[in-house]
Length: 277
Image (tube, rainbow, N blue to C red):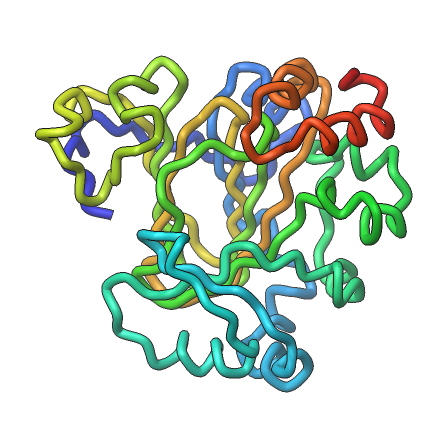
C-alpha cells in the first residue's frame, strides 16, 4: 500500500508468544498488534489450499465484491472464483470478503484454534446451532479470499467489535488510524493508497500504524480503529469479530447507532445477551 503519509506511520506492536496480560493490555489501550506465527500450527495452514477448496467446495456459490466499490458485485462458484484468483492481474479485482463459511460447512471450524484471549461473549453464551440458524447475524466469522491487489477499503468493524485475522496463505498490508485521527481520514472515506488530498487535505497529517502480515501471523484490530487492507499476494485468511470485557460497553452503545443493524435485530441481540440491553 503506497501510503502518502508513510512518515506518519509507526510499526505495529509485535508479539511472538504473548501472555494473556500482554493481549489484554493492548485491548484495553486500543492498540493494534500482530502475533508472529500465532497460527503456524493450525491444521488450516497446510490443509486450506486452492485445490482443497476447489475440490471439496467448488460447487458452492459465493458473492464477491470489487475491492474499490462493493456495489459492483457478483456471484461465482468457488471453483470459478479460485480460477479467477490464480490468474487475475487486475488492479482492482473482485474480493471474497463476506463468506460466512460455517453456515454451510461447519467442519472447517475444526481446522483452527481460537486463543483463549480472543474468547467471545457471544459465542460462549449462545448455542452453536442457534448461531448457525436464527442468530446468524451474530456469527461474526468469515473466510476471506482474493488475488493480489484485492483488499478492504478503510472502515470500522461492525458494532464496535474487536477482530482478529489470521493469514493462511498470501501476505497482507495493513494501516490503522485511531479515533483521534477520524477527521483526518475523512471518517473512513479516505483511500490510504490513493488519497484525494483536495477532498481530504488533512490526511497527510494523520498518524497511523502500519504492518505487513505473513502466513501464520494473527493481527488484532481494536474496536475503535479505522483500518484498510491490501493483499500483497493472492491468499486466504480467516477473521472472527468478538466481544469481551474490554469492548462490551462500546458494543452496547453501537447497537443503538450502527446503520447495519436494524432496531429489530438490536432487540433480538439484547434478548440473547442481556449485557447489551
